[in-house]
Image (tube, rainbow, N blue to C red):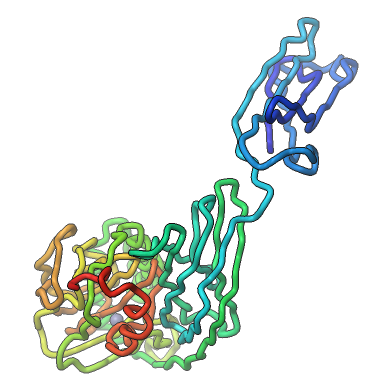
Length: 404
Ligand SMILES: [Zn+2]
């Protein structure tokens, strides 16, 4: 606890006690001698008290409701007393958590799913890999407390991390659990890109005219580097934040579909080194697939879902994001035209616009990526019907999947 007490004349006495089932436990009592402030009396004094309220200070405390009572007495001749009481819930055991046995093979940059059981005291649970926390959801058709989480092993994490199940109660107590897993490290490609003046002019012109918060410096390369760095990070954060606009429901059933007859121009997590006039000027990671057919081809929804974004989004130009439920989302960038709007329900194969080269794009192509609770993942797994069946669908009761 951290308590702030303000008084014109200072605090003579501060007391904190816990009450439970008619019993009272003293947690903290502090007296100040009146002399201490004798020669210096500003208008308002502020005292800060920090203490632990729990079994250490009150060993007889039981699990269940309790009351914390704070009392402060002013340091003047009146000795006025202020009291504050708050209801608390005492928990002396960590939250219950167990992960269902099973093998979890995880590709670096890929996705996986875990099922686990939590106690009724748990208010937040999921899977953590490195800095990323993935939410969990009640497993459809299962007993209360059975939850599942889609989680990702981000491409930029070292391959030696241990994914953890976690569960937290209202008081913030956290329990963690490990499960059987194997991470397959992946080598990501490295590509050199030569920037031309025409390309820089095209890109800066397009993006600055759509992004009023950016101001041009007058230096073409500097303007481009601002787009490629700061704006890229900002755009990726905006995309990641769309995870909060998700449905607690399976909106899809079939494997995700790749743009038909397309040529792969860039892979997921390609590391790009940018050169201008013979000098290396930047490095960035490419978080999706670049798929090219011809100009202005129809871009189709990779799967059933609900549009959560349709509009201009910085380096991604005209962009559509579809939510597929449970934090799984697909992203379509650089479109020349957009044929849907946020809130639209879309079926797999529905045209969402035409391919183009808006935003940070040289030629006409589709930038396609997928994210699991805001972390971009390699979409090849979600395109693969065997992977989808074995890793995802097999873990759900058949009758709970859409379309059955
Ligand atoms: Zn791309």
